[in-house]
Image (cartoon, rainbow, N blue to C red; front, side):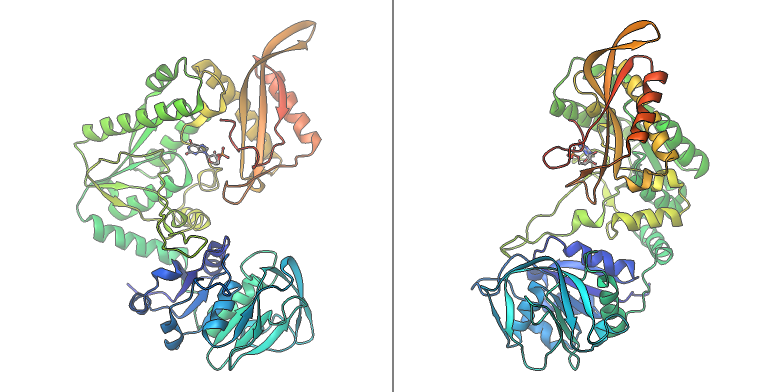
Length: 518
Ligand code: XMP
């Protein structure tokens, strides 16, 4: 299998390190993010990168124990780009001086271009002023030998520095964030122009290689995959099916708390369209039965998680077991995080997108998406011909509608919520807003309110509509619909769903709210 051009990103703990990787992948460059202290020289040699990028980080190089790049990387003859903290540690390690105590610059800043280099070629002309995004307190005061200034700002006289003979570059600003308008292009000048990457990382290529890798790993073994209807497990299933065909069986545990028509769609897509062996287990009686009388959100989650595992195991036992368990783990779940102080890296997030699969299952894992970011998984899904309704789908929580029905969950309430939710989503799609929103859904409120319909008084349930924008679900802003849209949706819900007579819109951001109500 041909090896792609690759760039290694050493992480010094910046909040936006992953964005460097995403910008590089977007320009067709394969890259990995390693904690700076996991980058032993032999490991770097084995990885064979065409260049290195040092990320930003929260530490100050003026403090004694602050993180450093392994000194050997400066003897490898590889191009290096240091960003923010990365620039400062590079400068320090190469004989320059960095000092604290200067006015900090945060957010938008303007730099004046005073020179030329490969990084700015075709983008920043000498004499121009350019917008960038800064976030730093310290700054370089004496350049290391061989470097010269290419751009400066009031707060950062060494905003962009270069030593073109050694192919070393450093920026005080963050090219990886969208607030630096030419940032992605500057990074591309580094990877393509300086390091000589060709942009050979494509989804079509990945698909073929991933199929080969799966075949090599699985051999004649049997694979089972828990399908949830979400993007990750769907893409993993179709990819594995392309690799090993009928050796794959998918298990779809239907807890009765899915959105309207979603179960039919899963069956139609995977069984009928892709010809994947699919077990559709309708376990709604079991789940709803055990949820009866339960009102505490965490209790609901526990019950659903436990039953999910039980049912999944039951189904896989009926199959007579399998050798491999497929999971839709993604790259952000496996990137080792570096602690803010630069201490040893320990935390590896583990995440199961199917709501927690059995720990004790004695099967090897197949995780064909573990090198990919979410947007790459979507691109791969499109490459595999998975319908847009699935590939572009909003995230949906494992416990489903149970956490969108505060209070006790019943089948009647779930049915009511499905009706409300599908009108809401239909209107969002009709208005062309679906892709602009990270997540949108309705919540059935545990209150009854008085209304009037025709000549009669009603005393029915109220619902809330929720829509947020976000990049990762960690923070979120409510979506600013126009009032005409909300009025139209409310009108349809109250007129078309018997039992609901009031609609509210949730305008809480996260924090302090959360996206879900429970
Ligand atoms: P919150 O409500 O914490 O949600 O702001 C952040 C994101 O996580 C999803 N979410 C869950 N997903 N099981 C899941 O698989 C859960 O128990 C769960 N709770 C919240 C939520 O939909 C949002 O995308």
